[in-house]
Image 1 (cartoon, rainbow, N blue to C red):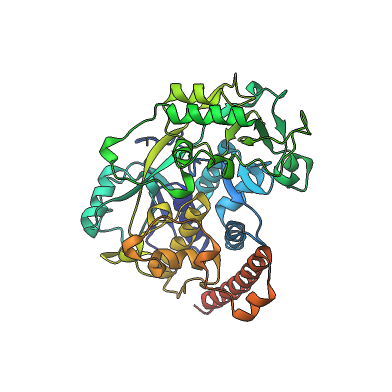
Image 2 (spheres, helix red, strand yellow):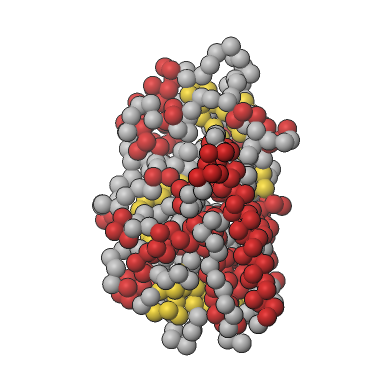
Length: 455
């Protein structure tokens, strides 16, 4: 059987390869690192986490991304399988040790008998003899391939800025000022309930921090002028420029936490640090994506109580993400209308986030494998998280205003009126969405397995 060629060894590429190989179809997975690096990756491992180590909420009963986790698990996701053993305490979120996670995915891909890993850049459109290709090169697609795709589609490049949060050494945080606690003590274990490091700020300290943040030197990219920021991952200084109170109602909100050093004093703002690795030696600053210059970062972050003498394992940064106008360019099975042998998956399609990228990789791999096997593969129901995301990028969004999107219940078909009336609160309505989605997914999986057996 001729193999499916998958270009890109990130979340989407690895999920696509795993999904197709799990259906019995041989795969060649192409990854250009280490032969050619990117401005954001630091290793040559597959599925390297660049911006954050968090897959966000793991609550599959009332949260859309947690529901997506559950749907991916039910489809045999390699990401979700690797995330469990690599997980680190993060309250109600699923966060992982980056190195452990990447190593597990790399090992699984390398050991699969139907997957061949080839290192080297695909510098341009894939050769014509590759009759089934999934391009999952992500937001950091190399220039030759991006140019070739642009030439094929006739589209001008769509892009936005994405930012990276800094990481500090845990032993350099002053624990006479900071303390361990998850918001609202979330978590079933003590490790989960104490998963975050918290640094409190008085009003005076907060105002001084904002002043320093607004005055700090930032990196400018004039050649990218006009490229917008992704609203879900704004640099902290951009948020601060929108209003001095913006951060207090965002990543620095002082709610759900009690300072044991001063239990009777309510902080004006709180900076949270999330555990970065399993050893607990590294923590990243939650919501502190930044484009400040390195020297400015050290000076500004030193104004945070508890971080006055912090040592940084990595400072923040910013890079450009590129995505397609998917509603205009892709069909319902993620094939490029201008060249149907090419499918696209992951962040380049206009989904945002590790989990969403991996989810689209699963679907692209399943579509490509079913096509190779001559089997039907209907898309997942729109009521599922997978179906809602697929619908958004293949026709649900307006092509003229298309922007990257995280999974959220706004992408799902509305609940029936009788269900809405019976679910009064926000959590109850969310639960109705997830219950409906799980039922729809189960029926879809059963139908897919039946079709496979018949074939």
